[in-house]
Length: 146
Image (tube, rainbow, N blue to C red; front, side, top):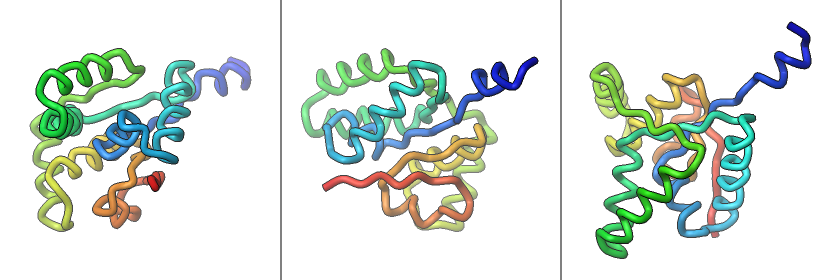
C-alpha cells in the first residue's frame, strides 16, 4: 500500500457532546461554524464523527423543553441525516461513566461523552466548562460561543 493510500484512508475520530450539538443547531457562533466544518469533514470521510445516544437524548429533551416535543422530534430527524454515528452505551460504558462521575464533578450525561471519546480514541468537541476540566483524561477541543 502506498503512503498516499494510507493518508487517504486515515480518519480522525471526533465526538460531539450535547453542548456542541446544541451550539450547531442553535447557530451559536463561533462554535456552530466549527461544528459545521467537522460535519463537512465527516461527509468527505476525513473525520469519523460520533455522539453518545445519551447525549442525543439530552439534546432531545432540551429542545423539547424550549420548543415542544414536535420540535424535538424534528431535531432528532435532522440529527439522523448528519454524518454522525450515534453510539448506544454498552453495560461496561455505563459503569465507566459512573466511575468517572465518582471522581469528577460533571453530569452523568457528560460522563457518557467523555467515555465515548475514550472508547473511540477520539477528541471530544465541547464548550462545556464541566468537561474542560478533564483535559488530562480525554483529548478535548474547546468550542466557544458569544
